Length: 192
Image 1 (tube, rainbow, N blue to C red):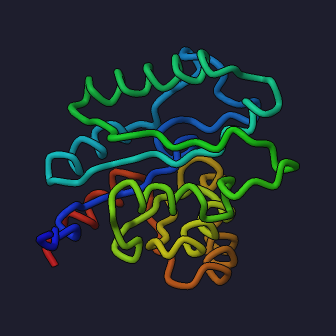
Image 2 (cartoon, rainbow, N blue to C red):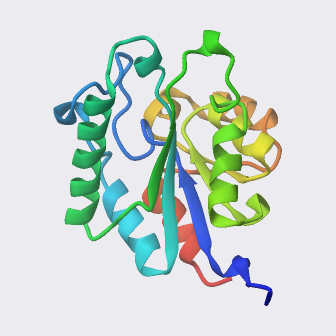
């Protein structure tokens, strides 16, 4: 069987809440509560147009807690897909962990299970895959999975001052910081 060059796929893993849409303490429970962060849909579109595949990896403990059911989650994701499509962007897939922290699953970030599933699905080495996060837990998940950790200062990280961001970065060697998903897209698309 001929060897297939898998490295041809350029893949980026995005957090959902706080990266693509406004983070809500009370969970995004219905489609109307999914509000895009300014410029995020366009950033996904720019990456797509440059040949990047984008997938979302999101903890959705609201399912395990009974705050949201699968049909509501699907409706939220349909709203997200429509919003991205309107900007010319698309996601290949949404991977989510439905478990509560108490269930001690393998897929809930900061554990790397979800990213390992993504690597398996795409037949990729994660060392070349940027993972975009808005909090320390997700950055730790990126590192645990062997992804390139990127922090965007939207969502939960928007509340941090420079000193707090530096303190966070000391716990995540190699992480890079960006103003938002648009700035991250620019840095990835800049010719080397």
